[in-house]
Image 1 (cartoon, helix red, strand yellow):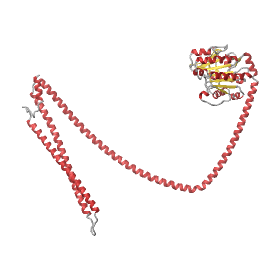
Image 2 (cartoon, rainbow, N blue to C red; image 1 turned 120 degrees about the vertical axis):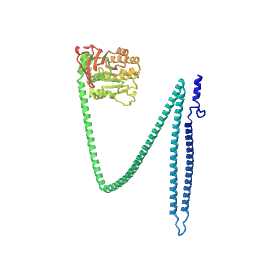
Image 3 (cartoon, rainbow, N blue to C red; image 1 turned 180 degrees about the vertical axis):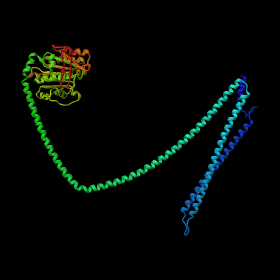
Image 4 (spheres, helix red, strand yellow; image 1 turned 90 degrees about the vertical axis):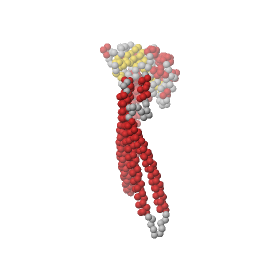
Length: 535
């Protein structure tokens, strides 16, 4: 260990301070001489820079003096008969300016040469130092015989060589980057020249546009003057033509108004005739009404459904129409109401999800003359939907209730209307749209407590009532609870994109199985009751 410590201390010793027997005295002397030469050149460079600065200061002072002299010459008045020596002063100034530029150029050339000389001497000094270190390391490696010292020296040598190689690579990279920067500067200079050319081109085009705009303005002014000069006669003709057109338009409007009045009169006449025909038809319906009263069953408006129910729905029945949306259950209810109106049986709508106008449009698809039956007083509405939606429209056939939860108001309005209907008719038909809204606005128990007496009073009046309810909105227990106060149910379903319905309760029927049907907004088309068609 003591040998290794001595070796390391020996390797760390500076040969210039403590020379050894393997020190290269000639190389050290040469390096010292080069350093002294570099210092001398740098001192000379500093002196030249100082001289150049003094020359620049003298140049600025002389330029200031020349400017002062020029100002004095301009302000001094010229004597009579003499002209100021402007030519000689100008010649002196040009000579002095040329001499200054020549000296400045010489100083710059001398400075560039000095910089090149200093750079070459520095590179030579670095190279000599690297060679000296490599020579010292080689000598040390040859003298030392120890294996540990050999390895350590070899590692130091490899490390130094790697560092020197890395330094050379970095120097090469710096040179390449400098070349790249120079290329980019040249490209930037070229782009600036192109931009300058484009700006000049744009300026020329702007001048051309301004000139063209000025020409166009002058041309428009000339055209306007020509038009004003020629518009005197044309204006009179146009006014005359305008008066003629106004007279013709007034004439056509009067004709159209006359035609509209004629059409209104014809429409009123047709309505009166249609109403008269309806009244005449209603007078001949006594036989069919008597037959319904005799069998105590109301026709549904669909012959196939009447056949399935063996004649129709019994008087006093409350029927739940249960199914998903858009399967035709509302169309079945509309057909049921339309069939009664055709026979003069009044209809009472209780609506919680549509306005009377919406129901009227649906009914006109099934019964086009529906409005005529309204005019005869055979239709009435109890509306708890419009006011809750903010609709303030007044319908002459409607009793309005503020909201669907006002059960007492709904009951009172239905009782008043039913009493009027029973004064001149054996029974009436009722359509309730829809129970789902009642349940949604309150709860199943509250809806049950309202519907239980409501259905009982309809049974007392021998009215035939249909109540729609949406499938999928209520649980099975709620449906069973509501079904307990009904006399039966028509259950709709969709299976593999086909629609079916089944009759539960109500009366004796030909089949209790699901029967396929198709529905449109105008009616239902029911399939066969044969076993091979029953699903």
